[in-house]
Length: 58
Image (cartoon, rainbow, N blue to C red; front, side):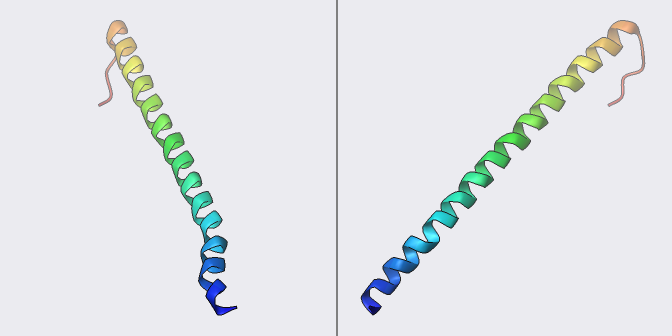
C-alpha cells in the first residue's frame, strides 16, 4: 500500500496542476489580446484626432 502512495499522490495532483496551467495560459492570452487591442485603438484614435486638429492626449 505504501509503495503506491507517491504514485497516487502524483496522479491526484497532476490534473489540478495541468488545469491551473491551462487557466493561466488562457487568461494571459486574453489579457495580452486586450492590451494590444487597446493600443491599436489608441493609435487609431490619435490619428483621427490629428486629422481633425484636436488636441492629442499622450
